[in-house]
Length: 501
Image (spheres, rainbow, N blue to C red):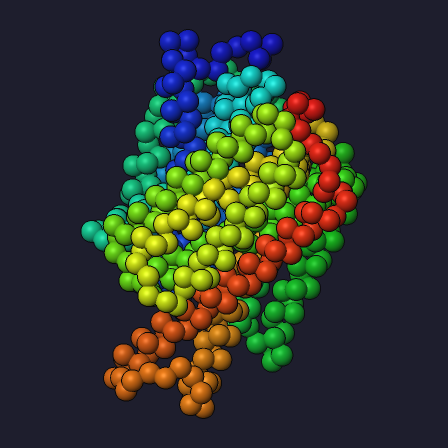
């Protein structure tokens, strides 16, 4: 009955509906990395430490992961129009409050709330995208649009932040986000009717306790990841207490899911080998994607590129993503095996890392980095859709919501692992470099003033960190390709024609 009720106004043309869905979807992803590439400017504006801002980014991700399993239940209580409009209004309010607060706890709470509201903004858009597609093609096309937009948001955020900070103060970034969110929000409010996509479900027996346990566990894990180096593990009992609380919360959460009639997450999905392997692929993929931030840091602090040059590099990445997602979608619809597509995608990422590794250190112009960034975009665009379909295709319709939620959680774990790895390598390599300079065995440098010497050491340390990080990620990709080639469970030749949502 609900399927026959129009969700959009009868007079709305298809092109306007699709444009409104894109404009409503994209800004939510942009908020994730709004200041991720400009932590120094953000720290100066808020007066917080860099580690506090890293923790706020992870808390934003925690809000997304923790609220995702509840979204379908809460979202079904209201019509799509009201639910989406309420989420957009609260999102804009929280962004405005971020420009006013100087309190770290308030800022962290707002970032967690923004993660939850991002789900409230993006999830209805994804459901509406699926509703506008043919049933047989909805899953690959819908996921291509969703993850393609997610991938494109990273270079778009970098371009927006670079140009905004070049001419305006840091607070302008939040107002730019509001301006980007308003057109899509207003358009969808005008185009949507008050009809529902799903039957209304009452808000009783909602697993708010499981939500709290899940969010607290992820939040403690994020805290330990970010502040690991500043915690005194041998002298102070605080980190061990947090680890104990984390383990206790995890045990209580798992036991609660096993005995609830309507669990927060259906843990039976872990009995599917392909799903577990898919989660591992998600984690590795997000760990690999972290090298893009390292490359941007290299461009800004070693090459000293200006805003226009950095924008041109990000445009190359953007073009590659669009081309890669489009090609992957066509090949999936044509029935190409997912393992083949994953091999091509991860192979392109390996080529990108080897290419940049060879360019680091020697004097090069920014234009010489355009081809490897184009290859990176192709690899990222090529690999996402096959990994998503490989992970979710073995699950039953009842298990798919849990599968999607855990896939989001796997991406959070991969992102958190990249933050931990980056922090560890930066501090370790800087300490090693300082020791070598103190012993007289480091790279020879001419006599410099103290501030110049510090700047030169920072540059050399970042150069060494970039090369070592890309070498490490390259080894991870080489190992992953061997696994894809040799592990029998991954030989499953899933094709689009053999699957229906």
